[in-house]
Length: 213
Image (cartoon, rainbow, N blue to C red; front, side, top):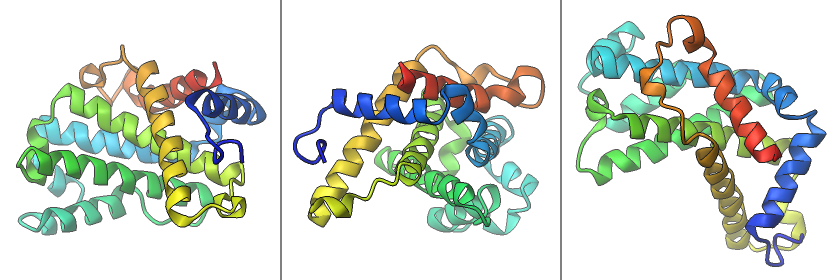
């Protein structure tokens, strides 16, 4: 209610800190985000494969060779189905919603640069980091809204006001996560072994700990 009456970044910071605390802290919040971590690993693994082996080759590896030559929208939908299936739990639904938000943002960037989905072959480290931050922050936002039972429609907000407030919350989380993630360069990490297998879990814990401060 305070946010709808003129909230600020400091208000969101307080709410986020309280949410992480009520979840048992950043480590506990990370452990409860198993669907997000699994989908994040799938997503980062896909992007890593595309950058190292090529777009079409990666589609074949994921048994998506029937997508080759299709429109970007069709390809994205098929990839999303493969790496974030609908599932049967709320957490899986949250992770799928987050990956769809992430693909939307990534596709916007691709279109703005005048390219198509196959240009993921040449994705740079900055874009790779940005899209991972987008996924983690979208997942945390969706999970926060669900678990905290934030029902914006109960606050006598119009639909446009509710959407505006949700966007402000999501952008706040994304900025916080991005700031905490500045020094990480995931393009240099081998996802197939050692610390690479744990990278998404570490990113989630970093994100939650940043919100907890």
